[in-house]
Amino acid sequence: MFAARQVISTVQRRAFSVSARDASKVAVLGAGGGIGQPLSLLLKLNPRVTELALYDVRGAPGVAADCSHVNTKSVVKGYEQADVAAALKGSEIVLIPAGVPRKPGMTRDDLFNTNASIVRDLAKAAAEHCPKAHILIISNPVNSTVPIAAEVFKAAGVYDPKRMFGVTTLDVVRASRFISQLKSTDPASENIVVVGGHSGATIVPLLSQSGYNLEGEQLDAYVKRVQFGGDEVVQAKGGAGSATLSMAMAGARFAESLLKAAQGEKGVIEPTFVDSPLYKDQGVDFFASQVELGPEGVEKIHPVGQITDYEQKLLDACLKDLKGNIEKGVKFAKENP
Ligand code: NAD
Ligand code: LMR
Image: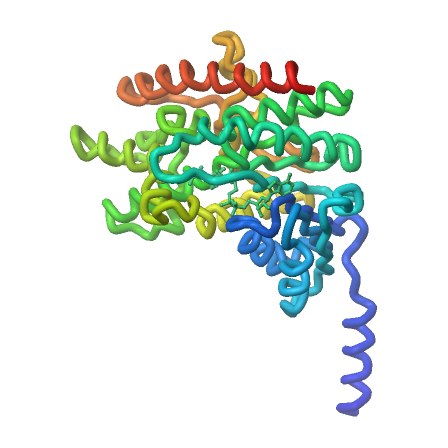
């Protein structure tokens, strides 16, 4: 009796396979790097991911072999430079953390000269080999690299603004963690709204929308910490790079939200930097706000909503910087196709 039951359950387990709807191939471009490695591990632990394609100009096969021993169902494959097409074909989600990180004293914009062409070339490959994938850009400066990728997709005739995302989740993760430290709350249950972009003054935490009311120097210090949280890590790493572990967590969270929405879950909302109608009348074509996700990617872009005068001043400064960052990316893509 016991043996028979054991055979049946083994057969059932073997017979179990995810439906085609739930088969999700996820590619990581830059998988050998500081973010790419822990991000790949977190994606390997996600049961919604059925195939994991790890690509890098160096080191991806090793990361893939290592990840592939983790006893979850997904299949992991590593791809080297010549294999980008195979890595991308059939991908539903493509995460791009390829590129150089900051060193102390640098701004994210200082990475532009190196990372702009890396993102452009990877976006070209994605436009060719998986034009319908959700593209998640992590490489900095995000405020410019997302517009670059969008221009590449436009030039290839496959741009769908619902499927192009700048990953700004780390700003929300930080804003939530930092307020929990001030208020002694559970950080996991905080979800502070952060809008704008992903660098310095373009990062705008909207504390008032979570019912918090910090004042004076405490508010200034909180906002500054959220806006310059990345610098805290860059300083602490002393030249060895920027945030990798917290970023991997944030990237995996965003990918999980997209997969949930793709698999039919409703009400999945994440802040993300997208092609947005909110401030186009001020010449700002991309903006991060609360975005409801659905099977096709962006389902609804929520407006910023009610904010305080203090937050409005932050937003005004944000829009000014953001406009320049976006224009810089678009100009690069047009002049360097
Ligand atoms: P890293 O140097 O550790 O890793 C980058 C990886 O990209 C390397 O393995 C490198 O070989 C690879 N790479 C370079 N060119 C490539 C190409 N053409 N194709 C494929 N792979 C390529 O850097 P990191 O710490 O992982 O950071 C990566 C990027 O993410 C940086 O630009 C950093 O500023 C950015 N970042 C963004 C956020 C965010 O919130 N969006 C947070 C942290 C870091
Ligand atoms: C971050 O916010 O940690 C990243 O954008 C990396 C950086 O350069 O600060």
